[in-house]
Length: 124
Image (cartoon, rainbow, N blue to C red; front, side, top):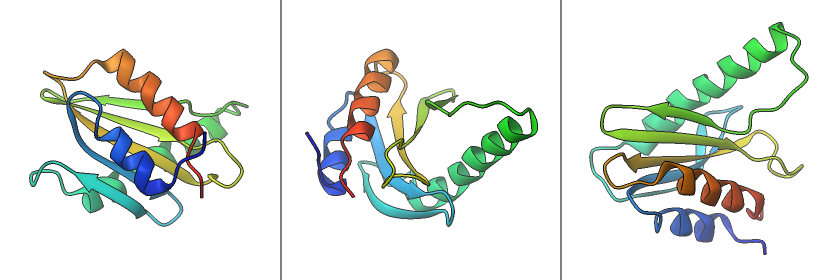
């Protein structure tokens, strides 16, 4: 079941505790789409910063000669979870889904599962 970028981001925002979601090109750091429920989270700044996180991890894996891929990256803050999920499809190469969650309301395991499903169904 493939979904448009807008549909995927809207679906991500229905997750319990969702604050913001974006589809990001990590070669440029630019967002291809974003949805936010909070004025406190600047998704453009978050996209650029998380691009650096993804690039750093990929460089590290390369230096360690790890023949593997990133499934997801979890950043746990005091009040939020930030999930980064690189897309695995050929058309999604170089892109990641980013989801920010309110830690007090989110179910981390369920959110990771739902984000994986959404990432697998993005149509570009």
